[in-house]
Image (cartoon, rainbow, N blue to C red; front, side):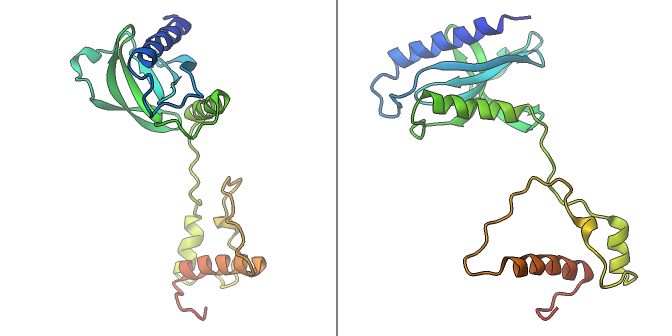
Length: 203
């Protein structure tokens, strides 16, 4: 097992050197930020974490012992699966670090007002990265839907079976001057009409 903190420190030194020797006084820099490696950990044998610099924020990944990235060309892209989804990484080579792959999060970095702001954004991304994505698609009661389509179900059937249980969706803000109760009823009726094949405006 590699020393993750040593890897993170090597990245910080390498990008601080790039900052001082290659990026100094370039307008793209955000002078309120500094180079910092955040949240580095081992995941599926690879070392992974977020690198913050005054000009970019990347999710950086170093190879596992079984990986052979020497056969890849610099600039090649490769997708990797995480609990939250698939992410594309670009192959690079950094003096003092070697070959690594990076997924761009932000560039340039002018929207960040200080280092703490950038750290909060990086940590928020890392927290979401390792959380399995929730399918927010409304579950459909196939049996109920079939009865409705065949005309076997009463027109007064309740649609609770089509509600999202524990949904994390945020309702849209109300339109000024609109009746919120009426809007909700219209929404439910639209869904009922769709399921029954009633598309007339008078339904």
